[in-house]
Structures are given as structure tokens and as C-alpha cells.
Image 1: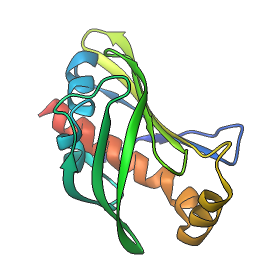
Image 2: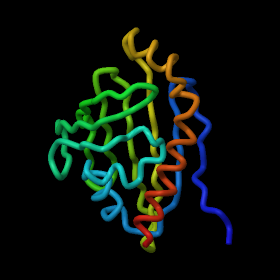
Image 3: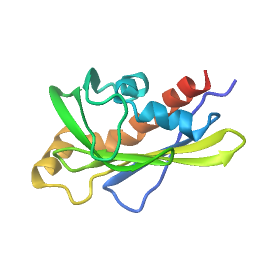
Length: 157
């Protein structure tokens, strides 16, 4: 049996990264999992999410949710949902102003294409320093691909 992999996408900006996968599940089912911040540890492929999730059970536009993280050092971050299109797209950002997004495209026959992306365009100087110190931009594509494979496994089980 072939190993399941997500496709790491080539993008037009060194400040953006993305990965994509097709999941044999309806978009709404997948979106419901992503829109529940308490489920994020289930499919975190980075190993940086340390749990301790706070916020609403279901996200919506403007919702805030927090989590314990660790990239070199432990910290807590609060995210704000900045895009929310039911069963189609959700994006959030935090103090550093970079944005995480999930876009879902219904392919028909119960299949959904899911793209996870990260954008660090127009971020403040202190965020630039954090990205450089942690090497996150270089690791994000692999972390996102791993997250999408885990999301696929959960949704298809």
C-alpha cells in the first residue's frame, strides 16, 4: 500500500507556504473538525501545539481562541478568526500578523480538496525576527503536509 502524502505547493512568494490533499469526506465534515479549536491537537503535524485550548467550541468570524505552543521555548498564543466561509474557508492570525488558512473545495462524490496555507506577508519587524530565529518558514511546508495527512486519516476513519 502506498504511503499517503500531501502535495507541497510551489508558491510565488518566499513568505507563503502551502500544502494540499484530497480527503474522501464531505467538506462540511472536514470544516466542522477545523472549526473546533479543541480538535486541532488531533491533526497538528508540527508537534508545536501543546494543548490547553481556550475559546468557543465552534469558531466563527472574529472568534478568539488560544493555545499553548512550543517552538524552542514554551509560549501561549491567542488567534483571531479573520475569514470564515462555512464549509469553504477559515483563516486566523495573531499578534505576529501571519495567517493560517484552510480552504476546502468540494470535488463531488464525497471528496474534498483541502489546502492549508501560511502567509507571513506584511508582518511587523518582531515577527520577522521570530521567523528567522525559529526557522519556521522552512519547516512549515512539511508540518502542513503532515497535518493534512493526519486530518485525512481522522476524516476517513
